[in-house]
Image 1 (tube, rainbow, N blue to C red):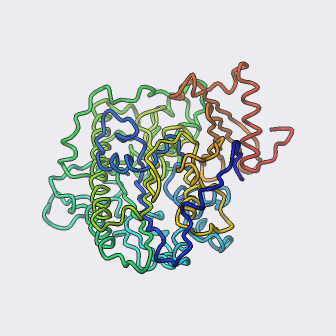
Image 2: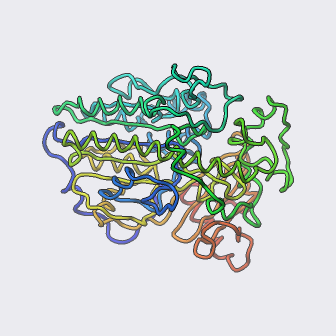
Image 3: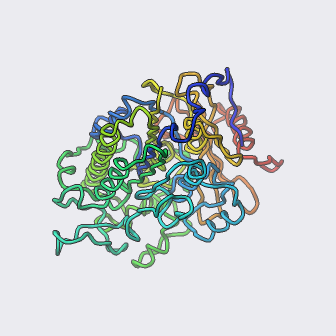
Length: 508
């Protein structure tokens, strides 16, 4: 669904960026995606986390303060971003490869961003996690992707043989963090960065390059070299200020554990199917709880919460150091003035907010992502425009002087990079529960976040949420049933349903 715009539409942007000569004159693209990264960065005002290299990139690009993912889970989010389609169009709401294959069979014209650039003369290379693990298509890339080993996300240093190769941990016997006293290159992120740097150094000046680099940290388990852990000693000031569920919020909004019921069962725990509010709080955030060192159920002690915060920050700083090596390599080859650099995350991450940990909610902390774009001719700036990850595909096409494919559902924000952008009125995010039985669809406007939870089979709305960011930026009060917001709720309902292409029946 096309988003609503107002104000003057961009007129002159194409004159700045569209290349009229051969493909060899087009800008390179370096696309950096960081897993599970919320805007907990120096350039986003973080008082705790040290990210000098990402901050350096931000100082020469445009920082988007209000960018949102389409789905706060790795696979659906990355598929949406790379294909330019929203989750309701891909119909991929989880990590089912059957659903993925059905989508690719049903929509063969919906080629990925990488395939599109390859078809337009780019040498396309992938390192790490760009698509979701095992979801890469060889035809998208000019050379075989380098995602690492199967289940590379579970990499640990072998405590019995620390000087030997790293190992892949058993998922149900994996610690939630590890801080080995090793070099950056001992872990996959460092080894991968070396490969990407070499690709930058060997770049042919006759062929433009699309280089996609995906860092798995700070995804669980939170593993980084010890020296990055040593940067941080979190205290209580780091803890979430809104650790309880929003007042008046439905359990389905913040209990992001239901997908882990079978995992809990394998460990002998029976997750309740219809929990009370207090029971749900004891189970919320099970992705974190499923790792060794965190209680599977019950209150997470403050000391462990602080360990999680330290480990998360350490992983962010570790990845920041790798980003610094990439940017230095681009600068060393003299290519930064002719390179589009995009840095973002696939979604945000709860650190105790709303009693949740990890992702898979529609709240601000799970859906808001860092987004930085540096491109030729762009002046450093900040943008408060509501932006979506689904917009990246058409935007990078426009910046590169390539016509965008017809299937895209996002809107290019390239004009915003020059200060000539028209205001975009909203961003859309969604999440499912119990497979695809229930779906929560959210719309984020300048002031409000409105969410509807529906039964997939019937389309019946069974819960609503409304958060007023002007009065409640931390989303602690659901005011959907407050009579003072009745007109707002009704207006946002209509806007959400129109934006998602959902008909509004009399019983809804």
